[in-house]
Length: 244
Image (tube, rainbow, N blue to C red; front, side):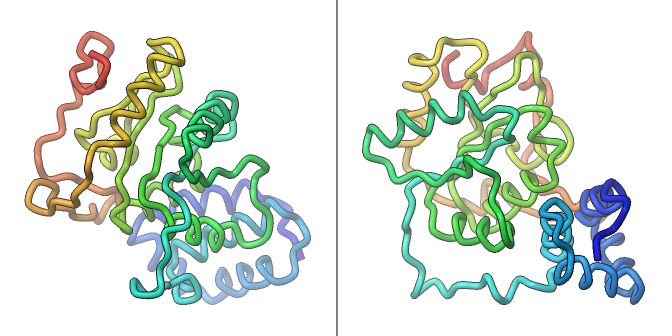
């Protein structure tokens, strides 16, 4: 059985990042029954993907992805998380990184099956995640789930700017906090890639004293308790661009 209105479930997926809405969905038996049917019986890949995403946010399927630290093997050095609207430049980055000997995980063909399972597998076996910042990335519930889970797993996060004049906002701004980013829109590719390499090579330690993390009950975005300078991302002030 497939639902005739996938946009409704896409909206519910986006809303399910909010803890209050998650709880309302969990206790709605009719909704949960419909969601289970979609996951099991729907042949539409998009609807199954959405159902998996909602289940992931409702934390009903996390146990099957859980991996103990002692059995965890770092299969990848880097994971690239991006919107498929930015595929061209991310493909270039992937090719350059692999030429330099890095083991890189990237989804080129939009994964099939349980995408959340595959996402968790890649994140749990990676050391660093590159986040390709753009409006399409911020609007994607799947990209948000990837970024949130990478943060929860305490991966090193390296943001890169992929869209001209884009200023990170909403959940994406709160997640990256005051991290340095590489601007692939302002500089030519070789120069930006060199800066990316330098940032990747910077030793990473997860410091809870500098980044005290809490979750907003209203939006469930990651909040960095040290001051977030929104002006950092304005075109007139780019001190956090590591090329400046």
